[in-house]
Amino acid sequence: MSGPRVSVVVPAYNAAWCVARAIDSVLAQTARDFELIVVNDGSTDDTATVLAGYGDRIRVVTQQNAGLSAARNAGIAAATGDWVAFLDADDWWLPGKLAAQLDLVDAQTDIGFCSTAALIVDPEGRQVGTWEDSGAHGAILRDIFATNATVAGSGSAVMAQRKLFARTGGFDTALRSLEDIDMWMRLAAITRFGCVREAQVCILRAPGSMSRNREVMRNSALQVMNKNRDLLPPPDRGAFWRTAMAGVLADYAKWRYRDGERAAALRDLVQAFALAPLARGRLILSLALAMLTGRPV
Image (cartoon, rainbow, N blue to C red; front, top):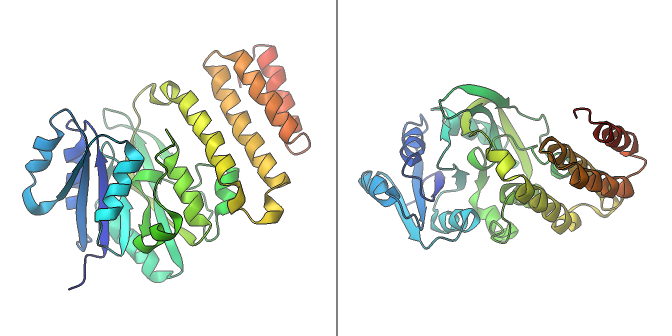
């Protein structure tokens, strides 16, 4: 007897306040050939009670707290579907999400992973932004290096062939952030990507959540860019990689400056200029001048 077409993996840590919304959004999918695996990552709240209320409509994997990457890896290990789709416990899907992705991969059989555009919503459920299809499809490894947010929706929108994880390895448990970007780079090095242009995912953004995690995100971004450099074709490991790395440093310099950390922002710009003085020099110098004169960036 064959397994389901899709295994949906929802990592949950102290998610009693939100996981039911995520689960309900999966159970409401118009495409029905899926199994739903929720990984209770050592929750100390009422997550286990909420999950127990769903009975045999979901599969629950329980483990000691080990973090988001380890929880996703546990879900992949338990999966039996041809495809694995990820959903964070505080986000949710629109009813046609899985159907749209399955239509896409059926039409383009060379795609090994795909995502969808997403709506960004606040805690009151109001739309505050969109994460649109970047337009980068097919071979997108260079695109992810150049723009880390290339894969729309990221950890709550991606669906990938389960067999590919045997080749890429699991999510990196050593990373404290951007573990999803790291995985998309590794997938993009061995397969092709597609994206559903219509928003099919809602991603929750709490006020201040990014600023609280900014330094963790910055350090993880630099680690991901360094550790995956050798995934690029040899001609791209030089000037292209340095230009991409300089772009990451410049982006986080802007955020550091906006958070009131001007000295740290300027240090990032110096490092970025040293990496790519020709490709990024004009941008970096204009940012530095604005920061030194107190102008907004």
